[in-house]
Length: 155
Image 1 (tube, rainbow, N blue to C red):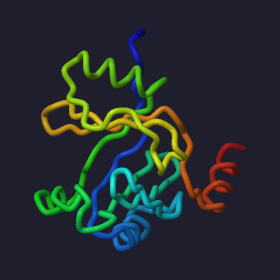
Image 2 (image 1 turned 90 degrees about the vertical axis):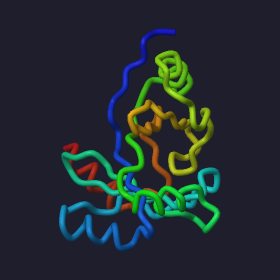
Image 3 (image 1 turned 120 degrees about the vertical axis):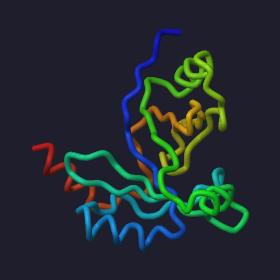
Image 4 (image 1 turned 120 degrees about the horizontal axis):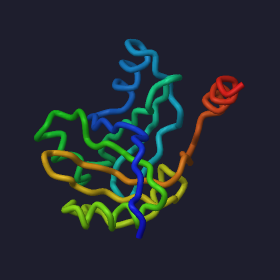
């Protein structure tokens, strides 16, 4: 296995409800919705990506129900930074590399519903750092206006 590279892709914020958090990001920092909310049944959360030209995406996650593991996280922390997501060549190689460096694997590679079933994994690096690994740019339920905005900024 070669030494994988890691590129920060997005920051994930855990919130009680997406709509008020989305409104705050839009009103105060100029973000806009990149995707419609997506129910992620595997992690028991609802996910919505926010975007702003020249900035990293912000992923908002809310518990999908009272039995979601995210409920305990929000009760303990009040919400806020949940994880950093890094893009790497392949999720499997990234997981093997981080595990060899002492990271704890929280969720082994599996399809990610918010990423159109591309592989994702979650690791804990230590020192309070949760990391999601992805190897795709795909997002499920991208809003048409977000696609147009991306195309016009590429010109």
